[in-house]
Image 1 (cartoon, rainbow, N blue to C red):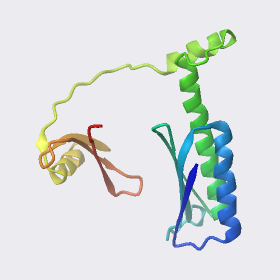
Image 2: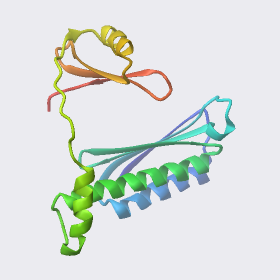
Image 3: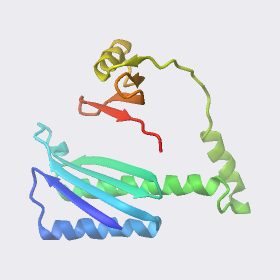
Length: 178
């Protein structure tokens, strides 16, 4: 597993770097096929000291991306919290694999039925993609009051999604055919 550590606006000591390596390395015990891990730790200039440090962890495992972000008053607390978030995501991901018939045990039949009840599509919505620029899509999203908007990019002719990020900025997902 390749671990990439990025820090912004905060100087990480060697002890902190080793702690990150050790904690991320322990995740491979829960999910053995992790190929890449990216850890970003940065300090924000917020008024709230409880949300001063941000830790983001992104893990790639067989094409599946698991990502977590947590904020705390110090680097170590943020790191511990985000590791717990990623741990829960790994367990949920492994549960989905398990309940899709990849290792189902007879004694788990009751748990499987409740899990399948939680995981069902309750509504299907069709939409017409209109060719437009990303700026036009942003305006359209704001007019609708949505957090995301799917559109056909008039420049690239690809399906794209514009979305509002937690910090109030916007992101753009551009779909590519494999």
